[in-house]
Length: 379
Ligand SMILES: NC(=O)c1ccc[n+]([C@@H]2O[C@H](COP(=O)([O-])OP(=O)(O)OC[C@H]3O[C@@H](n4cnc5c(N)ncnc54)[C@H](O)[C@@H]3O)[C@@H](O)[C@H]2O)c1
Image 1: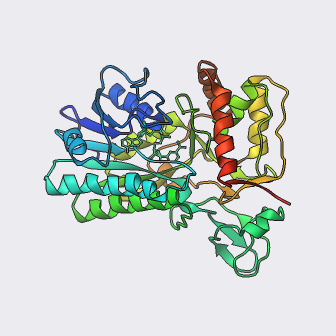
Image 2: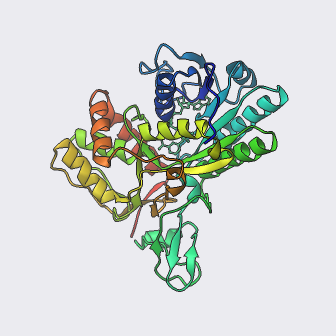
Image 3: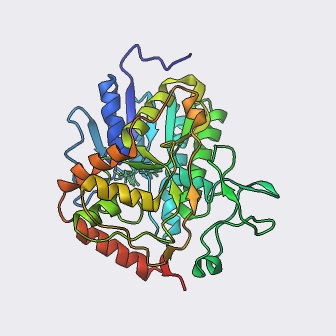
């Protein structure tokens, strides 16, 4: 197996390295002897006070800057051998251009600088997302493999949660989704797919080995609790720690896979060091499907509370019914998710207990989603 040459100390730039996945990747890189530089804008709401988080090790060279800023990026890339490009704009809000500005244009700038300034960058790993699959893969008994579009609003309003066959409108069974087909349907997902296309296509064209990582819902300590637009773990844990009932949208039967942040960091470093990954995209998932209600029951069990999940018949317009990643391709490189969901939740809960002001952020974010019409009530 061909590997990246690490005979002299390899200098890695991690954009977004002060964030959740970035900081765990930083820790792993340092433990493996890499020299690590972080470029991060310390963007709100994740970094409330614009302060470098305490968990970022002193051994890291930290640059505060924006991935859209040419001078900041040029400075950050100076002397760098490899790049993990993890900085991103992620939200449910309607400022569509910001998604493309940060996630797509920021990535294009990275490649523009490497090519035009003839920088000796040997490899780039970019963060994509399971969101690129939209509703993912299904099988219709009569029409075979399907990649259905977003469920129509009228269907959700009448509490018909399951995805129907786009050909005959009949019932289908969901399948785990491999890397072969994408169907991004929101601005975040489209910007992430654009990001990975920029990386893999420009990387191939200009001889910069690049890898796109499609993470499933990633969980573990340091995940920001200041942004409640996504992230079942932080919402369910923080609600239950506050003695409140969490809300499941639809009927709570939605299936997802959850992956531990330490496993994601291992996947990032593995594809960096293994040339078989060059110019490809990989799912990075937990390998198990869990319903929202089963997830809630597990959170209650781990926290030792007697709180069940409210199912008021609300739905989030644009949500995916089921999405579970097929991780065979990454397994083929020798990667395996290591951490069961129970342990992921326990670690997150321990971390969340050390934070302050949990409930306030959740309530504020929920209010914003209702005002924007993201959360709606079925008839
Ligand atoms: N966490 C997940 O479940 C998940 C799932 C799929 C994909 N991803 C992707 O993984 C990557 C890391 O996500 P995360 O969960 O660690 O997010 P995070 O918000 O914890 O970290 C992102 C970091 O990027 C920084 N940042 C944001 N905008 C920036 C800009 N314009 N310039 C420089 N820095 C900027 C933020 O300050 C933050 O520290 C992102 O690209 C995200 O899209 C995450």
